[in-house]
Image (cartoon, rainbow, N blue to C red; front, side):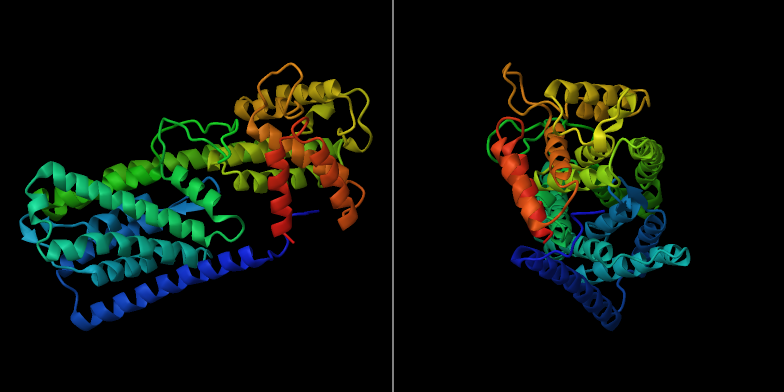
Length: 448
């Protein structure tokens, strides 16, 4: 059924596997060194460690699953950042070092994971490693300077100290994004890093160019601050307020993170409704005999992989995957079904009519208007004779993925693949976006 999910091969894939292993090894080394060092020296100011450890553990126990199967613990991450950046507690100077920060975060992560283990969900080593490395990075930037008195002149000027903390948080967020991109084995590093920066709220309100060729890339819409922004702001707020209010400030200023948790839980529930709607609609063409078995799933998988290569963000990737899986739903409105469900050789006008019919069906759901817009433009040529602007990038990706799978409807041998790409490249810059065609070639080459 799938023509993409094969064992990755090639030097690039092996390199990504080695970098992922390196990150996991660094996380394990940091945890072991921190716990051993803290046990040997003893816990400094144990009440501080206990309070912040409890916050991290509670946050981990209540972590949420974001779109794209990304797990996040806003409260736990904010608590870890606050402990790393803690200057003093109601006039008492904090004396814990980098190793104790990592040890407290590691032990709290373990405690917060126990409820998930009891429910049969084993901890993800990659998630644990990135949390430990982020805490270690923030603590390394702050704790030694603070302990040596190097921050005293900066702390005397409020604006300078605030700027320094913001810089530390931004660098920590960038470090975390690099770690996550390194842990992704299935795609190139740069698009993965770009997706992580967008997930953290980078480029808010401005939109970012997709593609490095200076062409007519789509623009990713700006939006509300990402969860990384909320975590960073809450962590700084807890660290600063504890100096004036003492440890009582910790539970009080955790309220924003709790609100973030509730908001993302509601978003996850809405996303579940969307996924159920897509699953139901995507099955209709094949159930009615209007498509070849597995065609919608294969096109969705190909389109998603190409979108990752072209640097689409998580929201755009999700909409692309939804649209790709439902791209043939317009065939249900035809009086005479297309033989085999293959629309590739139909006249362009008929392809466009089927796409518009499918978009009208999707709009009736009331929750997938942007997906309907992508489906409506999937049959439009990349370069139209009327000099109209090209369709959205997601629509161009679906057009190429659908054509490729239609060309291989009856066979999947190497000769058929070469003939399929010869035809796609012959129509590139006309019917198909040449950048999308080459991205598809790279995806399939990495898949073996």
